[in-house]
Amino acid sequence: MTKIVTISREFGSGGRTVGKKAAEILGIPCYDSEIIAKIAEQSGFAENYIREHSEDAVDSGIFAALSRTDYYGLNNSDQIWAIQCGIIKELAEQGPCVIVGRCADYILSDRDDILKVFIHAPKEARMQRIVHEYGETDIDPEKRITDKDKRRISYYQLYTDNKWGVAQNYNISLDTEAIGIDKCAEIIADLAK
Image 1 (tube, rainbow, N blue to C red):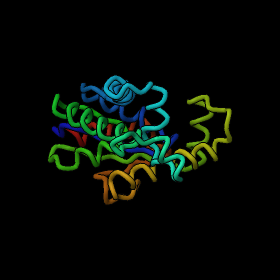
Image 2: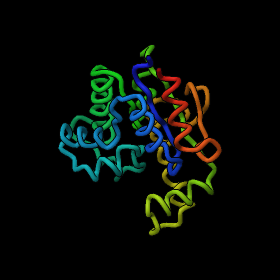
Image 3: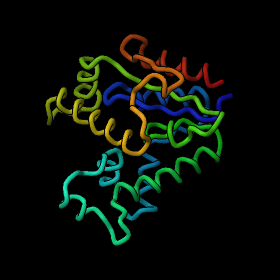
């Protein structure tokens, strides 16, 4: 059995749900918001701050840099990244699991027992999902998707020096609109057995 499954995903593609369902099928834990709680506990930052800034590239500009940098030259994003890496490695050492997001595919890339998955869907399907299933109606769904994916792309490239969403970085890429959430979870579970 593959010990660790990492789920990278486009915003609104249902990747979190796919990860949870795959973990249920396999009978292993799925880590997502639990990682945020652990980062908050170790860093002293509020969970909401972690949730909003843990997948952001560092803001640009001198004032942003000064306001987000401590005495030792580490900005908040770098501190969160370091803690996040440690937590993800610890979770992987504890046993088989599914880890959603947080660059886990890169952080654990030195392991032989990892299945790296990328979940995507057409923009129209993703827009419907964030409105109907996530209940996000405050911001135009297309703008929300574009902004969120842009942030993930920048963050991933900053900390991994790789391109987010490129097929060669993953073992498998699944389209939840074409295949369905449940079938994607089944495929992942079958590959991880």
